[in-house]
Amino acid sequence: MLLWLPVNQPRKVSMMSRLIPVIIMAACVVSMAACKDDDPVFDEKADRSSLVEMEAQIDTLISAGTCADTEDCRSIAFGDKPCGGPWSYKIYSVSGVDTLQLVGLVDAYNKFNKVLNERHGWMSDCMVVMSPDIDCVEGRCVAVE
Image (cartoon, rainbow, N blue to C red; front, side, top):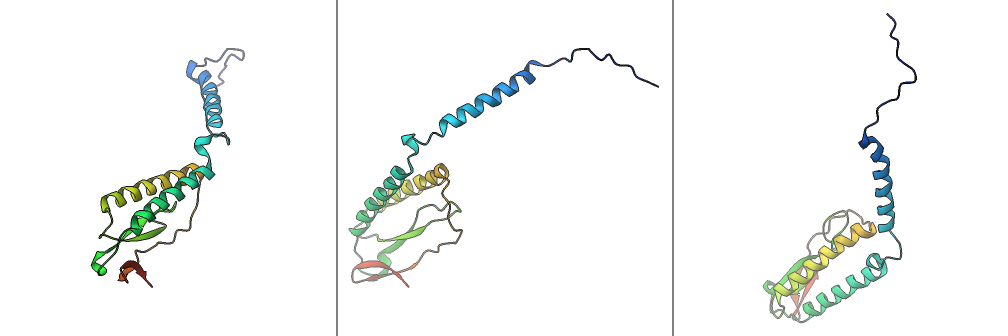
C-alpha cells in the first residue's frame, strides 16, 4: 500500500519551538556579560589579598594565647581545598584567646576560600591533611613533628 502525502503542506511550528533559539541566545549573552575580566568583584588579586588580610587577623588573635600545658592547646581546620578538606590546621591556646571569636574568623575565612575556589576555578591536590599532634613548649602551643 502506498501512502500519498502532500509535498508543499506547511508544517505547524509551536510558539515554544520558535522561542527556544532566542532564549538560548539571550542566556549566552547574559553569561558572557557576567564573565568580564575587568569586573572588580571578580578580581583574583584583590581576593587573594583579602585572604591574606583575614589570615593575618587570625594569626594576631592566636599569638595572644599562652599555655601552661598541652591541655590548653587545640587545632582548628584552616582553609578549604577545592578537592575538599582543609589546607592546614592553625594551632592555638584556649588560654588567652577568645575561642568564639577565633572560630568565627576561621569559619568566615574557610567559607570565603570556598567561594574563591569556585569563582576563580582554583585547584588543589587531593591529599588529606591530618590534624597535627600538639604540645605546649615554653608557653606556646606548637605542632609536634
